[in-house]
Image (cartoon, rainbow over all chains, first blue to last red; front, top):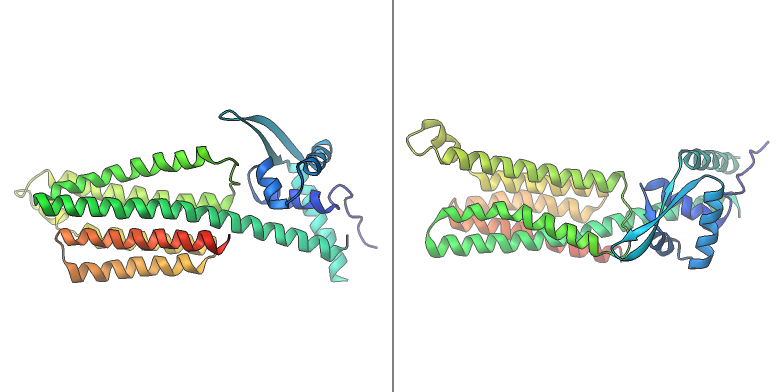
Length: 94
Length: 200
């Protein structure tokens, strides 16, 4: 029987955000927007969902006079991402 | 979304992230390369016109200006460039090179102050710094290329290290040896430019 894919991660944009954050220490909203080519509104919604799931943390601050939103993956998020990839491997290998 | 599509998203995102980090390093290669070329030409002309090798002390200003410019570039960026293990290792390689180059130069400078009567000072000062520094410079650049998985940087590092030493044996130990660093700076700046456009 195939393992269940995490519904939080099994979405195109959320998966892209998690893939970026899994490979870096932190990334700000503008960087995520550029890398995912998503709209600000859609990205905000998906970031909120990942935050609510405890997969990422969001820190709002300033860089000079400009507001900045910085995202980081949590240990729970990293673990969920790892499990998601393991599940994908099982799907693909069979 | 199928499992293959999910995997494709993960692979593409990771690749894009890596490209962004390599592309960003290109900017700093350009900045340090231009700075190196400018400093070497400045020392060369001052040494040539005054005949004083003491102008070599200007080299100690290079890391100060370089780090100040790096800070300025980073602080003026609109977005945070994502930092990860690769970018930290790359920064570490060049910091290690800077520490080695400055330490060796400082060591020779201090022993040089002991004067010609001191036998140890004569031996240490007679060590040619230029081929040594240009060789570790090329090595640092090649290791950078290995870490960033970029052939242009790997080859440029080899050209700088080996080419720089070869030029030294052609030009000799006089003021003309400064042009080796001009060569190294130009190679570094051009490498940065290529890398920047490679991943545009």
